Image (tube, rainbow, N blue to C red; front, side, top):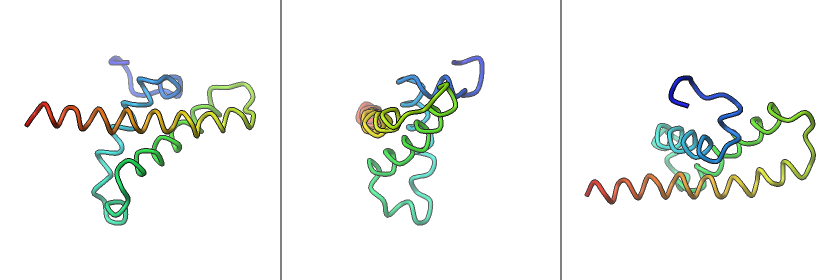
Length: 93
């Protein structure tokens, strides 16, 4: 992944999705209007905005269960992204 920008294929992997959500969440969480939203909720919203289109663009067909799995996987991705950031912050203190 270090040789190119994100692709839809990168975003459907766990590591790629976590990294993208972490970067986008940290970059945008202090914007007006967004700063009122708890970070973990904002990270989940970012995860959904990335995971659902990634699933659509990388699959031959998209089914309702695929979208439902994006809702569940979004929780895992958001929790990992927020947890990773807090873990790094703790190490820097």
